[in-house]
Image 1 (cartoon, rainbow, N blue to C red):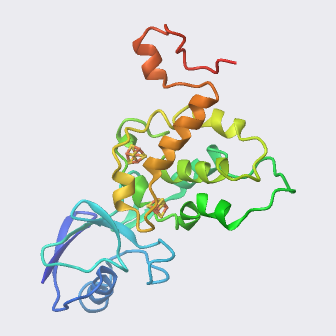
Image 2 (image 1 turned 180 degrees about the vertical axis):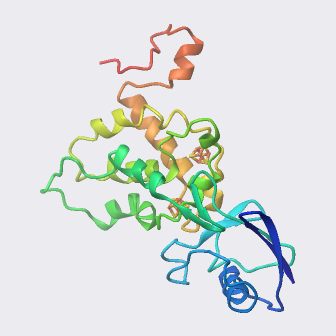
Length: 235
Ligand code: SF4
Ligand code: SF4
């Protein structure tokens, strides 16, 4: 079996005699037996920490869960700073969690969550910050400041939390480089190892935004700001 790995000076092909093996095991085998300069990140080795995300045949995967096939082409995540080989710096993507104010800002300490309440945003809590959705998102090729799928999923988690007394600041924040910049292409959902649909969360945030009086600025612009759609709250 052969795999190609993108490195500093182009793709390098490695031959391995392993079968039914995860990509992480193959990379470790190559490093130990053929090329100890090969660089990649890993952590828990069980799909929990999210640190071994990379691209195989142009699709984001976790190396510790993906089963390698002959001819696979391995590349680092996109839309992030490349450090070396398959190692990337995710720091910029994490700043979008802070920019989107994705936390409980005004806590209703009297509110008690029932098991039904917890189900509303249970899956969003499973995000392991692997960055796969961020890498797959096409918006970054035109807007590097897009808040992005995992940050917006996190915003939905707190907007839908009944302990949040006032979500208006979060809703206001996501009007710029946020919910209206998403193309709803669903690429983020397809690659998420935790079955989180950021696209669906963004759609729900659009509904919340509309209820709060906001609208899609491109839609309002296409009508020259007429029909009352001027992209600002109507109250
Ligand atoms: S659905 Fe939106 S957030 Fe998800 S990948 Fe597409 S453009 Fe990006
Ligand atoms: S939403 Fe899914 S793909 Fe995106 S960072 Fe979280 S776990 Fe990874």
